Structures are given as structure tokens and as C-alpha cells.
Length: 257
Image (cartoon, rainbow, N blue to C red; front, side, top):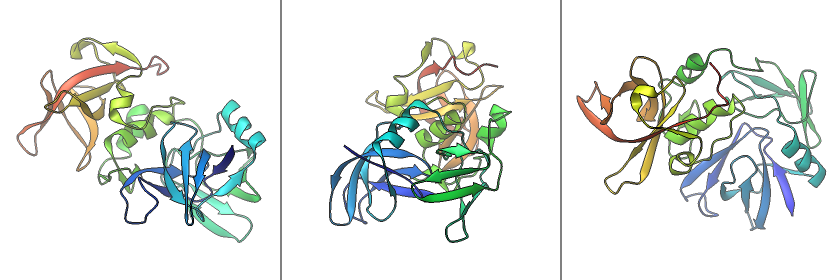
């Protein structure tokens, strides 16, 4: 088995080895993956963190040794948490602007090393102090299918990014995230940070958001925004109607308030 690691700010992951193919997710700086197949300009990968499979460009990553991959599997690297965090690429003195929830692989002191490249971290890093502020930092980020950054994000990418900063690895899609955590039977028993899921007419989970206080939910729909939640679902004051039908609530006990 061969392995790779993202040495760019973000890499688009596509459903097929074609630039016109649908973007199904993104690989962020410092995230590792297994290489399943090589094509002329593309590589089929499965991400280490959430086991998501798709195609990325052959020139958009660097190789990772088996020992390096094992080390990343054993050790949770520190995570960036500011949308303006910068990494100074020492080899050519250029700057990368890192998205929130990037991984600082092989981190020592104030720098991290990816392959033969060394990056000095110039912006904030470490643990998040306030969960609500973390989630709200994404407000007004435009909805982007497959997106995982402040510059474009989908509903499950949003919940995954926020939870990753608390060392909780959610799966990539809303339907898969709905299988994780402990079930909360009533909305009245929900706490700040619980995940709320919503279904389509066929009963399939298609949307997810994070519950805030005072019967509010923050979620990515058109953009990241705050709406009202009740037993029926999400009510949009902007649209004056319900936009999502309630399905379930899940709690991750690793979040301690």
C-alpha cells in the first residue's frame, strides 16, 4: 500500500478522474490518505480520517512513507483553528493560508514537516475555548457541495470541521454521521453542540446541523446561518416556512461543557 499527504491548503476530491467531475469532498492541509489506484493525471485515494474515497490530482500532494502514515494514525496532530492561520513554506519562502481544521502533521515547536518540506506556523493554533464561537466563525460561508472551508462548505463538512477541532472524527456525509454518537430521544433534552439530523420525503437523512441554545440551530443551507428548530424541523424566518423535516438528535459524550 502507498500513502500520501496534502501539502497544499486544500485539494478538491472528485467522483471521477476528470476536472469536470463533481467535487464530492476536499482534502485539507496535513491530512493523510491511502493511495488505491494511479491514473495518468489522477490518483484514487481513501482518506485516513474519515475513510472517504475519491480522485485527486497527481500533482497536488506529496508521498508519505508507511512509517509516517502509522505515526499519524497513532498520534493526533495539533489542529489549526483560525481561518487566517498562515504557514510559511521554508523551501521557497511562500505563504499558504490554511483552512480551519487543517492538521499540523509531525509538529515540533512552531513548525511542521510534510515530506521534505518544512512549514512554520505563523497564525493561531491549539484548542478552541468556546464552542459557539467556533461554529459561528463559519457564519455566511457559502454553501458548496463537497466543501470543507470558510470559502465554501456543505452541511456535513461544517459539522465535521467544527467537531474535528475537539478531536471528534465525524464521518463525511450526514447519513453516516447520523449513525455515530448516542441518541437523544427528545428535542427538549438536547444540549449545546448536539447534532440534529433531517430527512427527505423518503425518510433518508440528508441534512445535519449543530444545536445552539434557545431553540436555535446553526447549519449550512445556502450559506451557514442560524435558524429556529422545533419538533417539526428547521423553520426559516427569512423564508417564513419549514425547510427541513426533523429526524433525530445525536450526542457525542467527548464534548464536555
